Amino acid sequence: MNVIEPIRHCLSNLVTFTGRDSRTTFWIYTAFLVVLYFAVSWIYGLIVGGAMVLDGINAISSNPGSTNDAALADAIKTRMASTLVGTIWVNAIASLIATGLLVTAFVRRLHDSGKPGWIAGLAVALKLVGIGGGIASIPFVTAAFEKLDFAHPETMQADLQSLNSSPAVLMGMVSLLLVVVFGIMGSSDGHNRYGPEPADY
Image 1: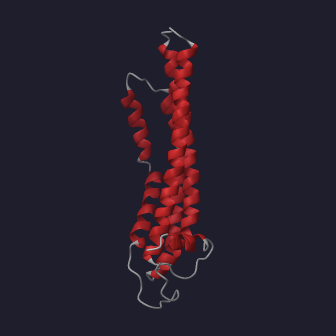
Image 2: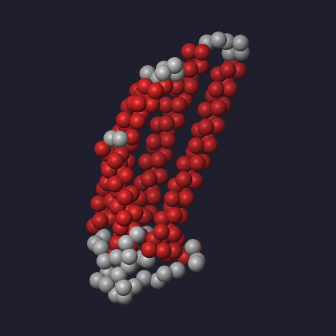
Image 3: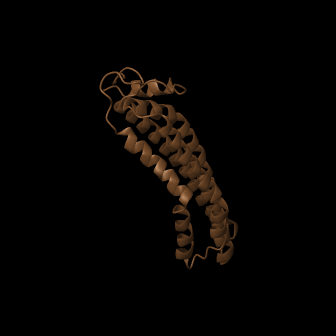
């Protein structure tokens, strides 16, 4: 099986909403996008994680022998809050890019199973609501870190957990479910109203 051809095919048809893509083509391309998404997240995590460690080292070395734990805790809380806010933005931007790169391939996959392309529009709309919900949570995340008490981290954990179950975030998850459910559907045999049977690489 050639894994490069499905990726090349989808990338060269980013604005082609007509025609059909096989399951194999769609899922190889989707796996490629998922790997890219997690690579970006991993690299960002390394960068901000390293910055957080350096901040801690600098805070300790700038006050050798100091027992001012409150100042150190405040510095850590500030860095954690900015890191999480940055993570939300990176996730939102990466999700927008991945959605844009996937939408036409999903439309063609829907066509291959005889389904209308508007289902992809519904998935995109739900994903945009989910991304918007993540961005809208930024003030709540910042507030949760401002009142963080390192002696009672379970309070902040409960606050952040409630953000993960917001309706907007759940709609983003429904979007992914639509892609999976319709993406695994079988192909129409032979020619259908959307065109001839697609090449399977």
